[in-house]
Image (cartoon, rainbow, N blue to C red; front, side):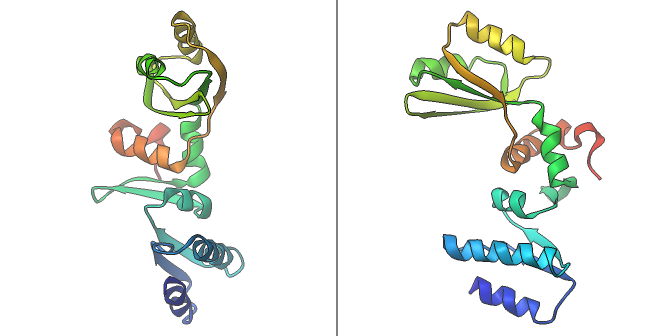
Length: 181
């Protein structure tokens, strides 16, 4: 039904196409088809697509520009790649050779903003932004002081969902580095 609605909207050949949650209620295969249609409309037919969605992974994949609206106020209006790059320098992914409750308690004391902790295969993965005025070296020294077994650390690229959470939780992040257009 969604695919039929999109096809009907395109019959008039409008220069701007508004799609509101175009993959809502679709199975995986149909959602992929709709995403490919959207890409094709923008690339080969030169259409401007206005996409409203709560599926931020889809917005990250399809959109050249992102607008974030919070409580009726536009808080961000940026090219997707630029918006993601503004938050990149703060995010790290740390992998630990341990997965237990004591480790989770110890990780909770680290100077990270909105950390995400997941466990798999006897390991723990911690992803988050460094707290203000904290360097990665200070974080690593704190881990060493607690004798937490670290396997790896790498700079992580935040996804659009993480950026959305950060921007909507913290008013000072709404206009990172004067970036909002």
